Amino acid sequence: MSSALSRIGAWYDECLLHHPLLAKAGTAASIGVLGDLAAQYHEGRLRARKRWSPAGAGGAYPHSSRFRWTFKYDFRRGFANVANNLFLTAPIYHYGYEWLESLIPVNNGDDVVAVSLAALGQVLVDCVIFDALFVLLLFLCSTFIEGRTSSATRDLRSSLKKNLLPAITAIWKINVYAIPVEYA
Image 1: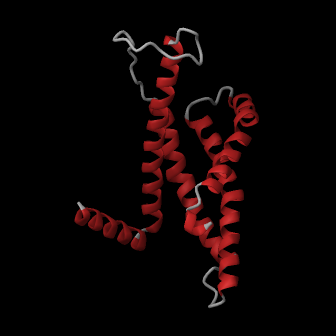
Image 2: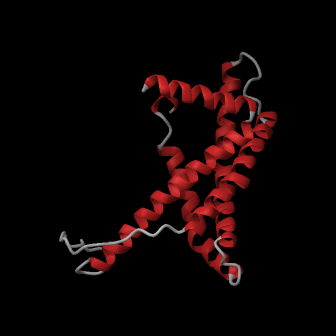
C-alpha cells in the first residue's frame, strides 16, 4: 500500500512540475465533485429526516424498516462545481499565488523574521481576499451554470444577501481553527 501511495505521490509531483495548471485544475475539480457529492448526500438525508420526523423539522426520524429515501444526484449542480473549480478557481489560484509571490516574496534571503512575516502576509491575503473572492465566484458560477438565468439577478442578489457573508465567515473560522498546531 505504501509503495502504491509513493508512486501516486511521485506521479502527482511530476504532473505539478511539468503541467502545474492542469494538475491543479484536475485536483480542484476532483475535490470539488467529491465534496459536492458528499454535500448533496447529506442534504438529501436531512430533507428525508425532516419529512419522516414526528415533530417536523428538528425531530428524530423513526428507526423502522419503513424509512426509505433515494439519493438523487443533481448533475447540473455538480457540473457547476466542477466548471468553477476547473476554469476559475484553479487558474486564479495558480496565477494569483505567482503574483502574490512576486508582490510578497517568501524566498528573499536568510532573514527568518522577514521570511516569516512574508509568509504570514501571504496567508492573510489568501484567507481574507482570495477566499472571499472564491466564495463570490462560486455563487456567480453556480447561479448561471445551474440555469437560474431567467431570474438570475434577483436570485443572485437574494442569495448573496442571505448566504455570502455567512459562507465567508465560515471559511475564515475554518482557516483559524484548522491551522495545524505546529504552525500556530
